[in-house]
Image (cartoon, rainbow, N blue to C red; front, top):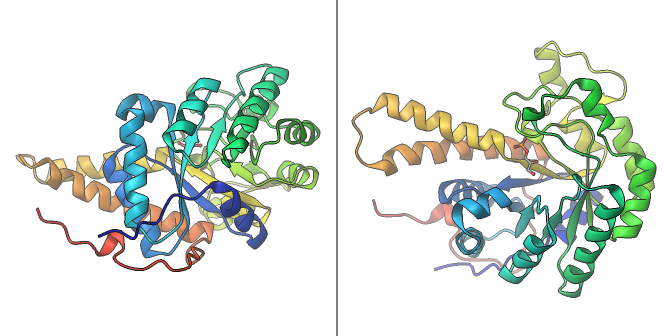
Length: 321
Ligand code: 13P
């Protein structure tokens, strides 16, 4: 039995989050256990959630599998779920995902010259909007840890607030992935954000703001203090970013690391294990704990207001071995 909760688009979900001052977790859907961990936890906490599929995940699982995993997960849950394309770096990928039933797209044209980024972003928003699907676009560049950049280089890649105003106007994007200091793929949460820049971008634009690379960002001021990291006046943490209007918070690396570490620990505990499910289940449970922490941090627990949702939730279903 399912609740037959259809996927929703990210449009209203992110506007509501912006207006009410909380963040929605956007977690990367890389395999079935991760999808289950995210959806079950969000369902238990009555939190709206975004499951996002990157081009890497599409290559790994295939577009059909990736799409169906999230669709089934949404049907089992009684919360609003968005199926989002994460970092679609070309036009065709966005169109294919639109056709596959994604309810939110992203065009990441940050590697292109600005005019090209604007032109392709606009082409995609035009097509997606005709189908009622919102599009996230990226301005500035959110680098990868593997790029080995200095603090100054990361700073130089950040989104320019004036350019952001023009970019949103010209692309008609529905949300903006603005580079404000985070770096993709970090294994430690130590990176501060440029909250002054975020304020200025928010002042000049009227769309929800997306934080990428959140695994590596300092979570709270208390964390910063405990880690001995002194924040400058304009700097802040994930907690601050939410207070200053960030609505969608992308987390991938930390969930992947959590899964891998838990598998390692289980393999060490039971080295002769022949049932792979007994290795994967503790990994899924470890991810659930981490997702719970994030949902608490983002303040979106209890924000899933779905009229008429009833029946079994994913977390209540008992599975046979
Ligand atoms: P992390 O892997 O650094 O958490 O970044 C995730 C992300 O921004 C996906 O778009």
